[in-house]
Image (cartoon, rainbow over all chains, first blue to last red; front, side, top):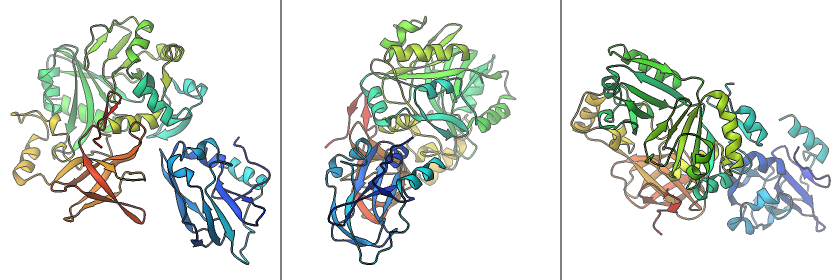
Length: 129
Length: 355
């Protein structure tokens, strides 16, 4: 069973979100997602200052096996991206919830967060896979 | 789903299993890249028991294979192996295979798993005209042990002496057949044993430090080695002349199936070729991505991926014969530059890509 930290929120498409003190969310992909993908060899993070609507494609994670789109989990604007992934994409395999983070997003005013899953709900969703 | 005799052994070794053409096979045992490097630098092993082994015997076994295969089996020495394509009447590739000559009247052929049914049907149809018989060794287990240290680690575990076995030759006894062949671009062997002997051999190879490797590493290794994958880099709709396999066609003889079609194509002019590509910059080349050069010649990637040995994206592509450098590839919404390079990309552990 993959590790699913209790203190994070999740999407059905296997992104995690960590609420930061400044109100923004840090986003990455879950341990389960990186296990499914296998060794990750290329990451394209979104451009800083770019705005995305919820479920917009905003990046891609490519493993030895396949390319997987990253979707913006909420409406918002990218305020930071993890530049370490350019040279060391395997950080996502080694440390999906920490060093392998993808980007930080500032949530748009009035954005809906109701679709985000709790750790428990996400655990249940991957058990059904 | 079909299972090889090593299925339990894979699960014990922590394999992630996938459906591979109806076979329940390991894609990796944790890290495909580590498995890849094990084969390039030391020794790794693959369960290839899903592949199909067919023995051809009889006074006209040679004549049958001379008609069936585009390469020249009459050139083979005893115990020598040969890679060949098997063509249909239109010159399309039914399959690629390895044939071992054990004697003038005794051959062993290994064909792909995914093409087993049509291959067997084609063999049966063609063999009827010859004084020869075919026997599928359906229960045979097959393990490929590959890498610079593969033979040294294997030798103490088997009673077939490999000290005199040259590359692309086989040595065998009643229980163990060892061909010094493979699909990785490294030295190594492919061993065929009875089903009972497979798991004990597999376990002893693990004890000897040979790393179990899945189909994922098998694919990156063969791509780096510039070796074709049936169904991607060739199929029944393309001839060997158009996909970089002209070298498997024997010269000055038209008696094999498909020869007439190849001659007609040569007269009309071959319009496609297979090239190697390296992506300049970051990204991953993949099967089915489209290519263009500055003059507008087009092509398509038939096999692509991240190459662990060169840490670059590499690909084989079937393109317009006149395509020239520089070539651009469409990846999602972007167009990225590629460089045309000679195959293979890697041989015996070394990158051959010029910087």
